[in-house]
Structures are given as C-alpha cells and as structure tokens.
Length: 330
Ligand SMILES: [Zn+2]
Ligand SMILES: [Zn+2]
Image (cartoon, rainbow, N blue to C red):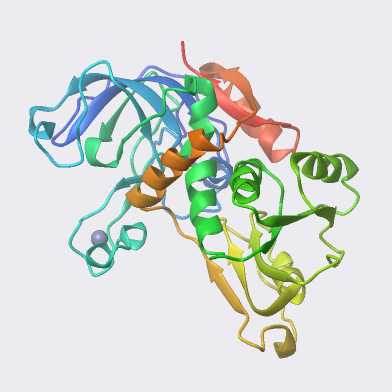
C-alpha cells in the first residue's frame, strides 16, 4: 500500500521486492499495527516524508534473508526464520553528540521506519538488523504489533514521570491502554481524562483500574505528581499543568500537537516542568519488551487485511476504532 503524496489515499500496487542492503534483514511481514503517526504523515502534518512511501512502523516479520555483513555485528543476532519486530527508530549514525550521550532518539541523522525508510504496509520489507527486536513468545503476531510503538514510546513517556505516585493520563487511546497496565502493576494511582462526556471511555478507564476518570475539562480530586498527554490537542497542556502539584511534570507523548494556548505563569511556577518525548532508543524497546510479558500487558486489536489499510486509517481519523488497528498480511 503506497503513499504517493500526502492527503491522498494509499494505493495498492506491486513494487519490487526489497533487497537487503548492508546491515539489513529481509522480512516477510506478518502484521503491522497502525499508529496515529501514520495518520499525521498521510494528512501532511509531518514534513518531508520519503515519497512514494510505504507506511508502517510496528512491524512483525519473519527473517527471510540476512545480509552477509550482519553476522557477527553486535546487537544483531538474527537468523533465517526468526520472528522480529521493527520499531519507529530505523537507523542512527552512532556518532553525533546525541548518539554518544545515550540519546540516539534525538540523532541528528536519524531515520524512521515508515517515514524516511519504507515500512510494513507491505508483504516484504528490509530493516536494519541493529534496530530490530526479538519478540516475546507469549504474544501472537497481531497482538504483539501494537507494543512496537504505542507500547515502546508510551513507555518512554511513562518513564519520564519518574517515581510519581499519582499520574494523570490525557487521551485514553492505544498508548494509554498499554502504559496504564504497567503503571498499575507498579502501584501508581491513575487519573484518566477523556473527551468531556465520553462516559464509555471513562467507565472503561475505571474498569481497568483507574482511581478516577473524568473529562479533560475537570479537575482531579487530588493534585497530580505527573501527567502524560497522549492526545494531539495543545489546549490540554495548560489544563494538565493546572492539575499538577508543585514540582510536577507534564509529558507530551505525541509527535504532533496543535498550538498550546497561553496560560498564567503561576501554573508553571513552583518548579513544574513541561517536556516532550521524541521517538525511542533501543534501550526503551528492550526494557519495555522485558516488562510487558511479566505484567502481562494485554493488547486489544481490530484486524484489517493489507488492502484495507485506507479503511483502517479512515476509521482511526474518525475516532471509530475501539481497539488498535492491525494490518494482517497473509
Ligand atoms: Zn507510532
Ligand atoms: Zn546520531
């Protein structure tokens, strides 16, 4: 399924089967989860995607070929037949100031799967072995796919809350569902904010174990030590700041957000912090894949055949998906 240019539907067409280059694996794609970032790319909200582009950065695939340069390369222990996961972070230079200070997520030359590199809305893809993960055996292909972005980048957002006991979550979508399970497992108290009037969403949050759930226009019963915003709505930043206790942090977990309205300085005063999360490091992915099966983090998916990727994206955009959309490639 190919994106020829933003703001047009993906097109089903035959393309040449990728040949693995130096450092790469050829993968037969089994499943690829759909992320909000895919929507932002299709809708022209992220600049300069590779075009034409094959989207998809939550790829589960089987290794079909290993480029000879891969064997013996550290961190690339893959053989033909292995099941691997490919995340958003697709390549880094390993040499810039960010890479050399454990912040490869901010690499000056970083390349991202399904954005600067062709991704997994396809039958085959080539991926750099150093950024692929072995996947826990307790998940099937379709259910493990959402862990590769919603899970991993959500986990990076969660880690930024430090040891906060009371955590607010704004936007109860894919990432929030997965991260809530870890937060509760680690004994945190969750306060979930949905669109005002979304009673079904609030009930679901309570049934998952949230201590409180309400609309994003409401104040929680207790001040929050941290809040994570997964929705791409800038006006939630001052709302979340206003709900924070002294010294609290607001973590913006999305790649794109509408403009943030102005707010009184008193809401930031007392060492409150606003930060954002960009991308992921391989270490985030490894840590998350260790903890997820132990919780165990459960995913809920709605599958679509590859050729119905546009339907999945349209339902996502319209807010009509109840679970994570995953393309199943047969
Ligand atoms: Zn994503
Ligand atoms: Zn770098």
